[in-house]
Amino acid sequence: MKGKAVLAIAVALAVLAAAAFIATRESRAARGYIDPSDTQLVQRGRPLYDQYCAACHGKALEGQPEWRKRLPNGRLPAPPHDESGHTWHHPDAVLIDIVRNGLVPGRTAPDGYESDMPAYAGTLSDDDIAAVLAYIKSRWPEKALAAQKEITLQRTAR
Image (cartoon, rainbow, N blue to C red; front, side, top):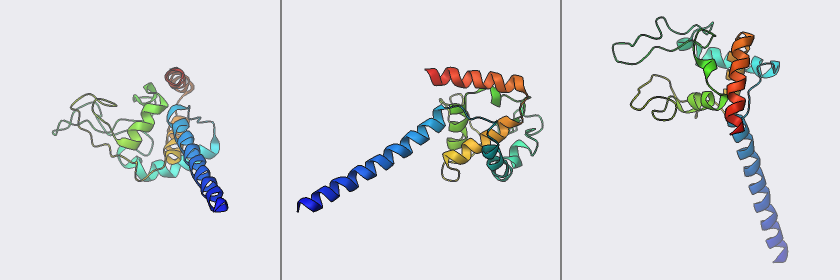
């Protein structure tokens, strides 16, 4: 009986440790800086970007034409992810949230805003999302990259 109790406690502790490890890794992905100098991460992100993002945001990250002009349905076209867009104005945690959950009114979009941005939570893991963002960031000029890193680090320090 004691042996079974010890085994049950050991299994429960192992499960809790695994859950804590996963939660810590996910929270680091959501709060930490995604480094575009990580060439393996960038290489992993490129085909994911091509598969899931390029159809709307452009193969060269150029976005849809007239992305600042509302469509007849009131929504905005997909913005560019190159330096001409506003992606680099956001900290990594916000970018992860947008990819994971789509644009959420009151959180990552103005109240009442409707968007065609899909949520990829059921499709892309946090590691996949980080890889896509690393690829996008690897294409930015140094000035935009430095500004976005500062925004991310300021947000993370809170």
